[in-house]
Image (cartoon, rainbow, N blue to C red):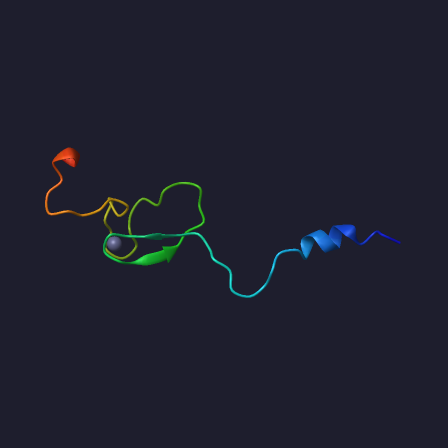
Amino acid sequence: MTINKKKAAEQKKPIGRVPIAGCRCHCGYEWAYQGTTRPEHCPKCKSWDWDKPQGPKSPDLAS
Ligand SMILES: [Zn+2]
């Protein structure tokens, strides 16, 4: 009579609004991203360094 345990576990996740993983670019754009690797670039401004602050000067990051 307790065969329903599996289903109970499946229904444990709450429905409704949930915080999902995402990214925010230095340009201010945010997008949902649930991959395990770092997105290559910002979908909006196409910046490859979207996850790095864009200061007026970045001597350490000079390529
Ligand atoms: Zn951007």
